[in-house]
Amino acid sequence: FDVLHRGHVEYLAAARVMGAALLVAVNSDTSVRQLGKGPDRPLNGERDRLIVVAGLESVSFVTLFIEKTPCELLARCRPDIYVKGGDYDMGLLEETRLMRSWGGRSLAIPFVEGHSTSALVRRIRGK
Image (cartoon, one colour):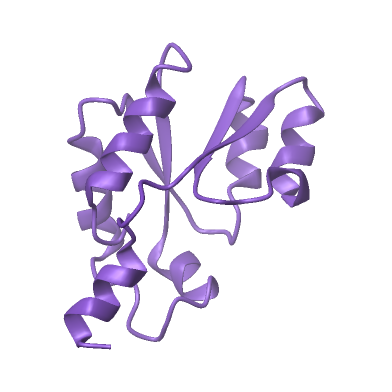
């Protein structure tokens, strides 16, 4: 959620209708850097990203996680459903194995075509 765009808003709204509440886990600045998105990412600091995501109508709660994956948070919260936006192979994720351990489900909501923070950053930079 570095630069919030329409795709984020749409898939968070889709995630919200899947359950009674939507808890959004936002990567810390350190966690974003570990994901290898570039030395200048995130563009917006974690506090700003938390505030922007919390302002969305679909979001019930927002929290920060500092690890590379949200597995520790998932283990504490034990949600029924874990959702990621994008084209992930959910079967390969550590989070999916963890969710299955208590009968939870992991789902991927497809990206909205033409809406990507990385593509937007490249376009702004003229690349």
